[in-house]
Image 1 (cartoon, rainbow, N blue to C red):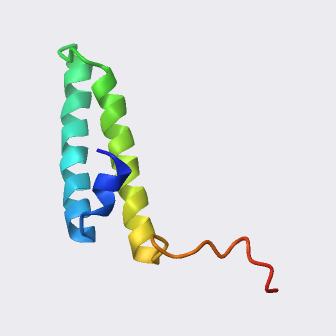
Image 2: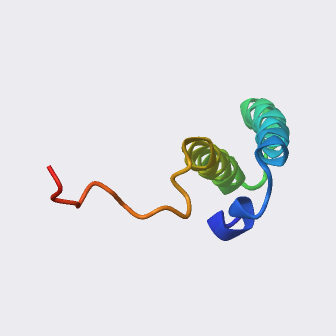
Length: 76
């Protein structure tokens, strides 16, 4: 899932998507431990998707998305 796709969803939808991906990750780990997993890179991909979604959730909760970056200002 691309970050631009994540940003179009609401926070509740993102949290549900993260929960679904965590369940998938658990199943992938289980398959990996049993030696049944054919595509090992899927584990890495799901982990990155979870991290991407959590990053977008944090941005939305803090209101960082859509605002100007205030770290570079010299108004001090």
